[in-house]
Length: 314
Ligand SMILES: O=C[C@H](O)COP(=O)(O)O
Image (cartoon, rainbow, N blue to C red):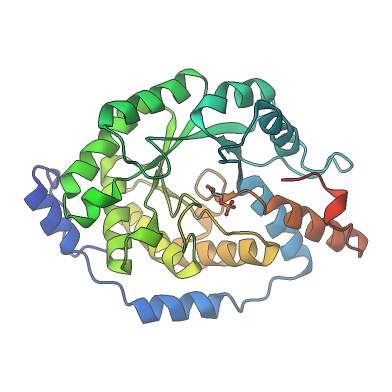
């Protein structure tokens, strides 16, 4: 946590913002890796595992972000999001379906009255390399079509060049364009080079108004990792201690197994605290995690694996 309470005008200039972000304590990279690895050895079994699987399902942002996406694919995904296992109505729905902006209207119609949110990537996802006006119009269109959550990317080029003010101002502008829709700010941690940068980008995004900070687009490797998520969970914990506001965290990209998902839940509990064990404050962005969660869930209750062919494609 910063040793001093930030003045309200930390973003008054790039110089003041830079001084603030570079005044954050440095991240012990080896320590972060070791702690994440140590927490990954925690065993979660039987009743606790069943509860963890249902919680993980409720936290999934079921994602399709392919150039080849079609309205039909989004409709199928929406059916799966609302009733992940048609043969077992005790399986909870996922948190959200995440699509490109041009497919938001399809998703909104398909998910009407299901309680599943529609999230849209925006701001020239995944690179973010468009003029601000295009990013804002991308965002406004998704919101106008009914997205209640917007996943924006930060301008990594500006961030790495030290132009923090530009990144801050873009987040503020996109938040305004969200008009009440929840804003998830994607840091694309695989391009930020150091864990110190991950911590700085986390604090920058939170001060600029992010409702969530998200690791990755899923288009860059490495995507989500436990140590990077740990650094972000520390940031939201400390930001809450400083400001009283809880910001959510969303690891995304490369999360495929129940074991991975449960490891993330252990991290959340141990680092940010139990208050974050809620879909309002923690999401798993994933295109192909849900089937494994369903298989492991069925195995716990029946003792046998149904096998991947039993479930529709994620
Ligand atoms: O935001 C979610 C990611 O784009 C999904 O990545 P994934 O296909 O590796 O699960």
